[in-house]
Picture (cartoon, rainbow, N blue to C red):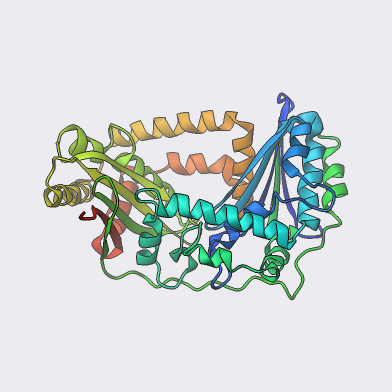
Length: 407
């Protein structure tokens, strides 16, 4: 649109519901200096009322809808789902808080208390809850990925001012920094006019509210390790092998690698360390898909009767075996079948479809919703073996080991 808002529409006339998603290209990496956790705080503030809507949730529920939001390192997503005939209600609500969110001291004080309490409950009171405080700080030295989404310290939230909040709003919560994605059974003859009606008048960011550029993280050149002694029920090993960002050509092969290495009971780590060994109770692998930099993440909990050093050595030996021996064609085919099945069921959910459209549009490549599965299916045995040898290397590794603190 003229004000910079990107709109992506997916009309499905067979649906009786519609999903209206608004993605803002702002996450914890955009937290102001000394205000870590700010993007997450702002997610809460967006439900505090706007010029014409004192209670966002109540207004949407009256239209038969429901909603939620999620903040990540790179983006914040607000998603609504409601009867297709009432889609304009969601457009009005989202436009009203984009144009005229109520930012006052009372709302700020209320949400600060909520977010600080959430920080204490999830990071300070739960076992392993502070993992990403330790791990991110090992992996990143200059990039703002070095703090978790919830923030580095809850005092950063407690000290946030109304001026901080307003500056953040006018910098990031503007139409030229947002994606509006709508999927479902809306009236295709009316939807463009409805969008213009509610969003066209909202001004873009002004020159005084331009986001600062982010620093580039230097290449990691050595293994980094940290031992944490805490009130945890058992020791756990967390490994993070740094990988390129979401749009790198190796991303699909790395995703497939994680499936083969540690997803489910047929994965190599589970087969060697849990099923055929008494050394581990649990082990898994996952892929962090952040925009600027990602990781292959492995978490492994030694069995309570196992010797820790022996278990840890076996974990690294299994990873080295995976890298040295590689995978086979039948193993890859099995994973591809699972991916196709997962993609099929995911596409059935209209809310997931809207979220994917918003995410791909934020990357500047909405066409990926039709193309990315084929990129995965094109991954070869050689591709997986190559990325394993390239990225599962000691100089890319950051490790956090939790131990039970002595009484």
